Image 1 (tube, one colour):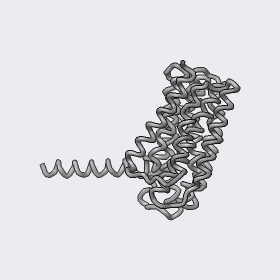
Image 2 (cartoon, helix red, strand yellow):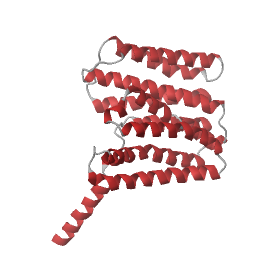
Image 3 (tube, one colour):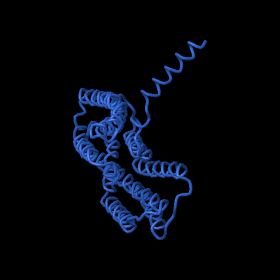
Image 4 (cartoon, helix red, strand yellow):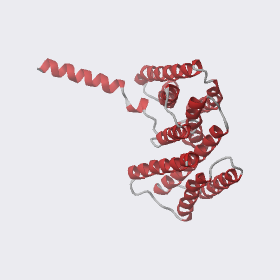
Length: 279
């Protein structure tokens, strides 16, 4: 029994070592919704779920996950991480990259070459992020880096529609714009509330005017018939809460509850946007 217990402990130790959370799970937990909500909005608008749509999900998640182990690996190489993590981080990076490339190859083999137009800006964003990782960790969480990342993850919406239609059409571009706007405004709002919670200075006017600009752009797009009128509703709500948050400081009383609330807001916004094309 003692021998079995020792073997069990050793197996558990190896498992914990292999699945080290810090090397696999992105630190920005809210970024999950920035990827998954646009994806499911694209699926709803496209109105189908087939093999290419599934490959888009697997490839997108793998590309999303690859950043964390690559960043950890580069930090170790730069002398700012645990040397023991280097091989494990490299292994996870290779695994996620291989899955992403396999999914992309499968999509291209199915004739969905339009997806390459989405891969180019995402690849450029990832390279820029990794270049920042070579310098200092604080640079990874700058305002504009986070906003750009949020907008980039919104490409899952047009990717899902292309997987069904095979075309990077006006609807695909409109979905990317709407979901990028929602993600970016969400990032700005969350940063403002977290800054208030920790007593740090925040760009309050930037948050307010960004919401105003995005709402004005959405309204103009609706007038031109590019997007459905229902898509205006969530952005009007985003502006209302931004005004509430900008007027005075509102510290977050419970971080986890706040995080789940923001995910709910993202989902609700996505449903309004999708409903605009479906109703």
